[in-house]
Length: 195
Length: 195
Image 1 (cartoon, each protein chain N blue to C red):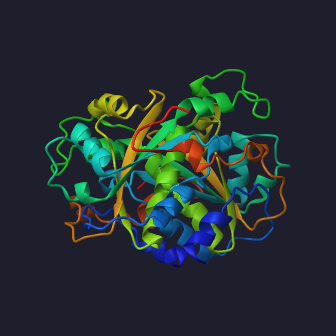
Image 2 (image 1 turned 90 degrees about the vertical axis):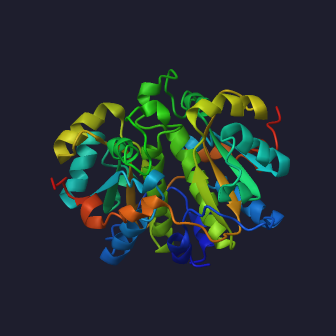
């Protein structure tokens, strides 16, 4: 598909058909995630792919009692994990040369942002392959049980999960009523203009 | 261009030709940024577009004495700003229903991640239009002077800037020697496996 069509067709889909995701499509989605940019090429990310019983277990422990939700019907979940230590370590290497792992050197949490880059590439690749997805967060009070149940080491923080599958009819998010903010509101030129 | 070609051709480019970016391309790049997903459709982002003297001023105040760098030759800079308050406010609205603006409700800094989504869409759109770009951070100790010199309100935090233009020959980043991490290292299935 043309790049521009993929960008404009992408939306968060919240209901899915009962059809599996082809292995080749899932493989390409994961491969493209690894082509996301990352600060210092740190690539401080990991992806936990859940299907079948493991996928159901994820929903049961992170959002119990909601198995009527359309998102539960997605056949594949990809939990996106950011690994801050990989960045702090990377920047103490000789070609970067920071002398410590002080977080105040960082202007933004690039471990989370870069893992987000990978997540967006997966969502776009899904569209390019006739699939759909939705990115959603794990409630902070469920993150501990998620780590425990899936054996995920503490330093890997789930910034969210992607549910993937073939789109079924869904109810548009109430958020869309807000409307897209136009360039006139969010783009400033030369110097910030107060509005 | 085909989506898959855009993903695989994108790389951070650090030197640029002395050629302007066409207005139509810049407009499409900014328009695609606004098609990034955001939590609750909060769209808590802003973009400051700098060219000419204002672009030079940005470099002078954020990284003085380095005007020999290839990245300084890029004709356009887009500073990407995240606006946390827009998210905290959005989730107190009736359809979200959080009763306070407590940040501990958030599993990850979606204000920064969503602004990152917009930045990646701009980098990819540049490639789709024959252009190139690089995303780079502003040193934390230069963020105050950036706010002052460009009149940017404090709640808008620059997660980084994109330099845009036509690619010229550059020296590949030393980071690339690290190599891309393969799926076998970063993708886990069903449950985390210790490696």
